[in-house]
Length: 216
Image (cartoon, rainbow, N blue to C red; front, side, top):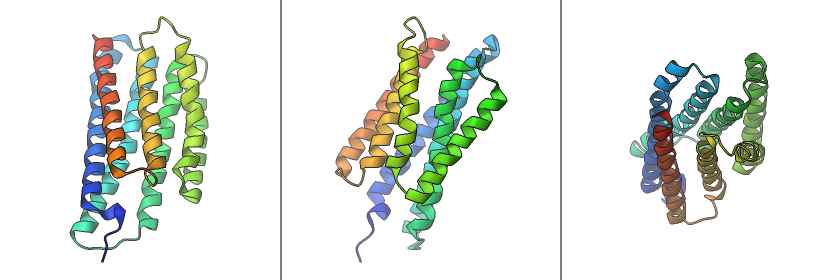
């Protein structure tokens, strides 16, 4: 019997490794910037760090999903993908939307009350989760998240002297590549998917390099 594509050991291994790497990098940035926040008590830095925490949670959800998939394929257990995928996809949609919201808030935190931001961002994130659950479509999630990314890029493009300008640009580029991968994986060869994932990791590594320069 042919193995379904989503249970292919090679594909699972690549996804598992990719998710694990991104989770590690997100955690690294989160803790590496802790000292800088402790010294400055700058709220913008705190919310910037929080964005990485939620990106890490988004990829941790994917990571756990692929661990379960590994277990399923290893022990020849069949669990309907219609059960696992919507749950994993909904968690990724929620955490990544909150992460993007915190990126925006790290720039505008002086203008909006944090409690109001929490309420508004969670409403938006839950709407995205509902869309992702009902449609099972990464494209629909991307259509909600891309305007947020566009706003982040526009705001930081205007900050000509901002030290964090390129950090936001790189992080937005990283997530755009991931949205492309998630949306197009049904239409592009697996080899191209790997290339895009390697590219996104490369962008993230360069982002960490910029973060390290920033904290120094």
